[in-house]
Image 1 (spheres, rainbow, N blue to C red):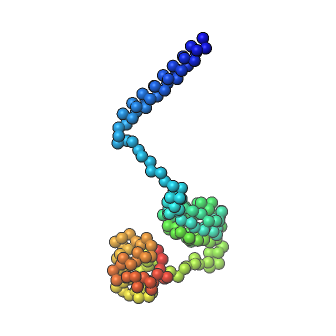
Image 2 (tube, helix red, strand yellow):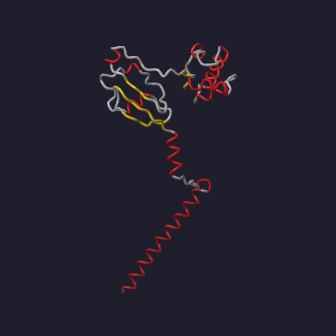
Image 3 (cartoon, rainbow, N blue to C red):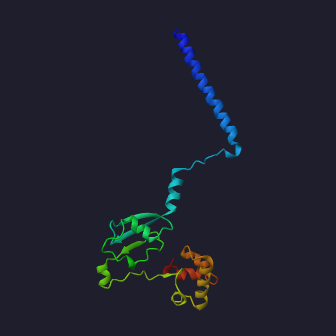
Amino acid sequence: MKNRKVIKILLVAVCFVAAGVVFSCAVKKQRGPEENVVLEEVSEEETTESMTERLVCVHVCGSVATPGVYYLEEGSRIHEAVELAGGLTEEAAGQSINLAEPVKDGEQIYIPSLEEMKNGYETPTDGLVNINTAEVDELKTLPGIGDIKAEAIISYRESNGGFSNIQEITNVEGIKDSSYEKIKDYIKV
């Protein structure tokens, strides 16, 4: 009697396995060869590198709820960094900073208070010429840049949607590596 139970259990198990094999084959036939997907194995190091390539690190401080260092996706805006820092405090002079400006890696975003603004606070400048926004007169303050090169810089950025990094300025007609070496410490994007 025990042998019959064992045989019945084995037959049921074999039926389930056979049904699974038949079902699996039927699904593969329906899917077709073009839907077979091969996943490329990616190492942990490659994943970490690709993630860090897309992140920028900023220091948000001043009149925000939780000052600190935050990581955002490349292309994020200052308002997103401020939101990560808990938002503006009641004392914040939020109108004093362009919240729509893209963040830059390593940037410090300082939100002054209304009191600081009332007492004559001025947003600090780094003294660098932003080649994506500077007009001819400001560009001409750079070593070796006159009217013609300044106009060429503006023309290049207008036709190419701006500069993504400072070295891209060497793509401007008339600005080669030697000119770049003279101005690289005085420009930013």
